[in-house]
Amino acid sequence: MLYNDERPQNFNDLLGQDANKEVFKRQITTGKFSHAYLFYGHHGCGKTTSARALARAAVCQHPTENGPCGECAMCK
Image 1 (cartoon, rainbow, N blue to C red):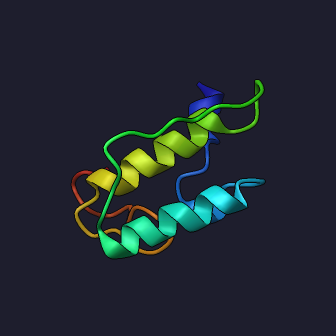
Image 2: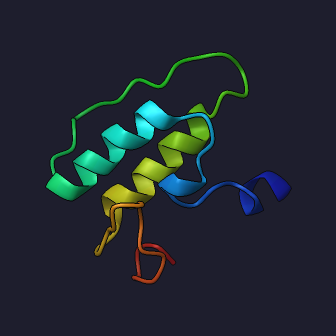
Image 3: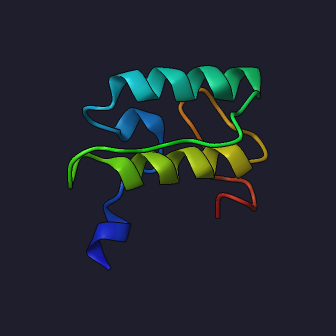
């Protein structure tokens, strides 16, 4: 599916989510994640894309500040 192939894979590729990106980057660098996140907004604003990027970074074995490394077993 095209929407899965073209979906941003890290935090730098997210557009219009500056506040979320800063929170996500801070949590990646400290290693402290919340137990739940609430993504809300209008249709097409990037909720699912942001959630998927955060989930990939959370399970990554070697996350960077920009999100998942893209090279470990969990990222592939």
